[in-house]
Figure 1 (cartoon, each protein chain N blue to C red):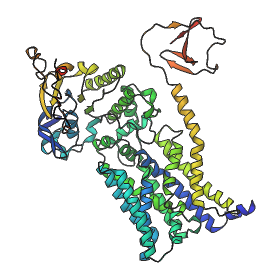
Figure 2: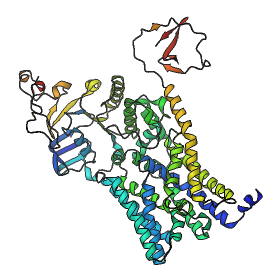
Figure 3: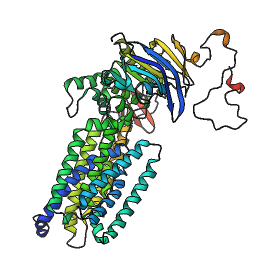
Amino acid sequence: MLDAPVIEVVDGAVAIAGRPILRGIDLSVRRGEFVALMGANGSGKSTLVRAITGLRPLVAGQISLFGTPLSDFRDWHKVGFVPQRAGAGGGVPASVWEVVASGRLTRRRLLRPLGKADRAAIAEALDVVGLADKTSEGVSTLSGGQQQRVLIARALAGEPELFFLDEPTAGVDLPNQQALADALRVLSERGATIVLVAHELGPMAPLIDRAVVMRDGRAVYDGAPLADHEVHDPHFGEAHTHHHPRPAHHDHAPHVAAPLDLRGTEEGDRR
Amino acid sequence: MSEFLDLFSLPFMQRALIAALFAGLAAPAVGTYLVQRRMALMGDGIGHVAVTGVAIGLLTGLSPTWAAVVVAILGAIAIELIRERGHANGDVALALLFYGGLAGGVLITGIAGQGAATLQSYLFGSILTISVSDVLFTMALAAVVLVVAIGLMPQLFAVAQDQEFAQVAGLRVRTYNLLVAVLAAVTVTVAMRTVGLLLVSALLVVPVATAQQVSRSFRTTLFAAMALGVAASIGGLALAAYLSFDAAVAPGPTIVLLSLAGFVVTLPLGAWLRRRHRLREPFPEVGNGEHLEVPEKHDHVHGSDCGHPAVPHGDHVDYVHDGHRHAAHGSHYDEH
């Protein structure tokens, strides 16, 4: 099974509360690839990652991880998940070390204390994201970018082969984005497979092998990396299309709009 | 004073001390997980539901304590399932259980032909009338709660901290959530005899709130809360005994008020610690090398003992005073 794709989605569909969100998704990611999943807000890119990680059930189609159908998949220590920020703070203070150590649970058995290998992996993960000097700080006292790096270190601590990162750069300043990109470069060079959900790539752009663009719940582009502005172009940056009007964007939730609302077709929206 | 010390040689006082010790240990351990998942009032909800359990015990002639355990566990599972649904407005659902449990309890107690006095010993605690079998019951349940709450700390912490991450990490999130709910229910019934069902949530939550004023990690919070819980329950019991020579001082409310007093005392300490930590946070390095030279004369040389906060900034230290950030540069100071 070594040659099986790390991720394989065949004709996947996801519905939330009865409304179809993702339709007809086919995606295959090979070992070691760095894939950027791009698209506007509401295009379904986060939903796709949530489906692949088993957080959202499919209503049709199939997903396999490492050649095993998702329903039979048990090797969760091979998967590292970095959710959209928010989960970094609870009602009780938690130190950076504690949060990162919780990522090691994928490889620990019940009621066993941390072993030497566990501690080494946690220290290594903190080192890769550049937070080795902040281990005893409370997570909630860190800046947004640093919290995001804590979440990446948490995923790293389990020493996974496949990473999912959901908008790690949202609301993060440029120096912190650079620090994130450096950490991801290290991972990628070690041979990890990375799926990055991003609205804009910023400093991550040079790392990407392949871009998949989602629009309105479908994958509309799958190929060579795109520049940030090309993603939102209906024809992905072909020169002759620049004067065509852009189609209206919409979210999946029904609009509550007045009859005269010309959403998305005003002059100002054209380029 | 010797009268007071003699109290501790009385069997009922010794039983009360043992019960207070175990309740004081177990309640904050579980309370830490409840506070972490921002469900500080869950203990209260379970307490109200347990009133119905006590009443059913009185009506059927079974042990009110065991009936309370069973009904509290059912109530806690119901609360957890409502919370899990999420969009079903958890706090309203909790409120419905609160009032349903309390009203049902009072109604059934009346049907059972028991007066308000019987119910009151469960509502506000009656630690001084606790029997030997109740002490053993308290010890056994508290020990189970402690073993689970501390032994499974990594798993329970991860699930409460970030449920989705825990699920992708392969943990059985639902099982752990229900486990915490059951632990909370058992703890409520353990502490029922000590402080009573209406005050039990205080013993779960207040020591945690006090501990996190000064702690920066989950582990420290949990163990500090347990220490504070024991101090409050043993101290409150002794204080109530000491004061009861002059007036009728009930142990339950004394324990809760002593615990709250601990919170009030640590509040300014926590505020001061957080402020100090914020002031000492290093300034970010923003690579423009140009700085204004400060013409102002200083009547002293800034240093580790000058009293002005010294904040790391890149490869040097800025001294903060009067709204300035001054860094030594040769024989003068620069504004950074």
